[in-house]
Length: 152
Image (cartoon, rainbow, N blue to C red; front, side):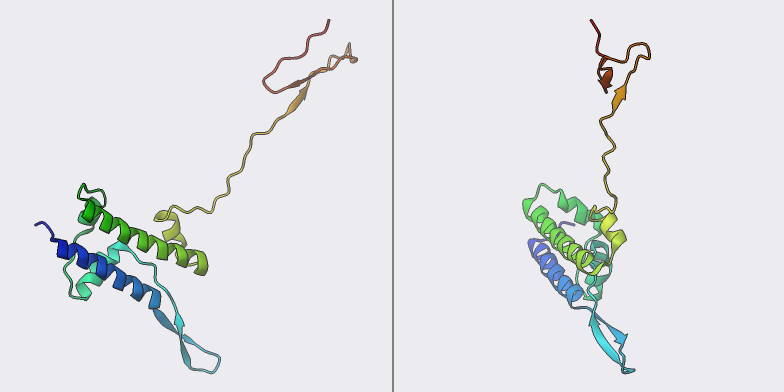
C-alpha cells in the first residue's frame, strides 16, 4: 500500500520529536551527598529503533526499514529528500555525541564510517651503495629504480 504525502510529512515531524528526546535524555546518577542527580545522557538516534519501537510506542503508523531504505534511493524526490534529511539529522546528532562525549565508538565505526587507524606511509627513498673494492675513487651510489653510473 502506497503511503500518502501526509504520512511522509508525519514521518519527518516524528523524527524531529524523536531527535529532541534523544538530545534531552537524562539518567540518574549518585551524587556525593548520598542522593541522586539527573545528568544529561544524550542517546544516539538509530533508524531501527525509531521505526520499530519509537513510532509504535507513540501510537504512530510506521514503515519497515526496507521501505525506508528503498525511499532513500527512490525516484520520488519528495520521499527521497525527506528520508535523506532524516538520515542526515540522525547522523549529525550521532557524530556530535561521539565526538563530544566519546559514546558509541562501534556505532561511529560501523554506521558513520569513522576509523581509529592511523595511516602510515611506508614508502621511503633508499640510497644503495654499489662499491667496487678494486676501484673506490668513483661515485658508485645509485638510487632506487636507477642503474649504477658507468665509468669512462
